[in-house]
Figure 1: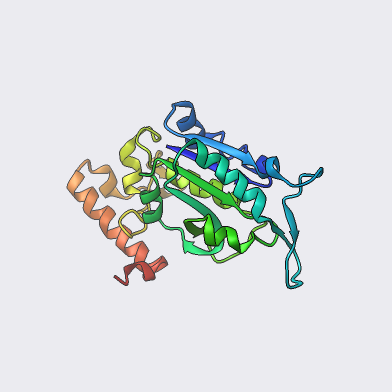
Figure 2: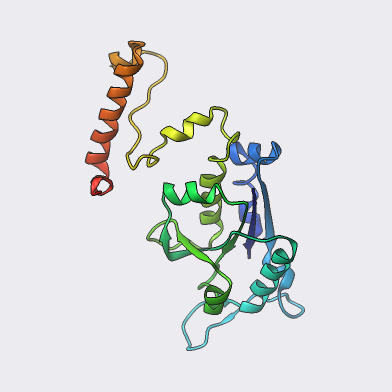
Length: 225
């Protein structure tokens, strides 16, 4: 898999994409992630990538030309399954979307900045818009890092134990059950006896029950269907 990320502030992505599971997946050759500085195609001697919006609204807007030229350069090198714009009004990211995107071969992620991007980019270049929640952050870099992490960890070989991702929250539309590790008792707080029983059927039944219980308590809207 290859992920190309277009950013006005590429430095924001250096650390999140260089460490932990994503960093190891890159080193293993399971995924390529390239971050591209949009200013490469900035206009004029100052490499401008933003301008005031028509209509007089406050805030600067990323211009269409630099983004168009950057995407065209990338498309000249390979075909892409999706050109994703990280947007607060896109479809809400969930596990099903991450599962779907993890099966793609090549993806472009476009990070907005300032007040957003010229709408013509969204109309003619972007194939999908994804939001990480109903709030606004300073740019699309953090959402892009989050989306990339949620995708890469699903690629076979990215996790030491590939079955681990199958038991994550939301994989079956339920929250994960509680998890415990050593010691068995700390400060009078004990690990549930069933987890120490060594009986896989009892443990699975307990985990299923707790997953449903926690979902009903914390995220009841997940059980609507």
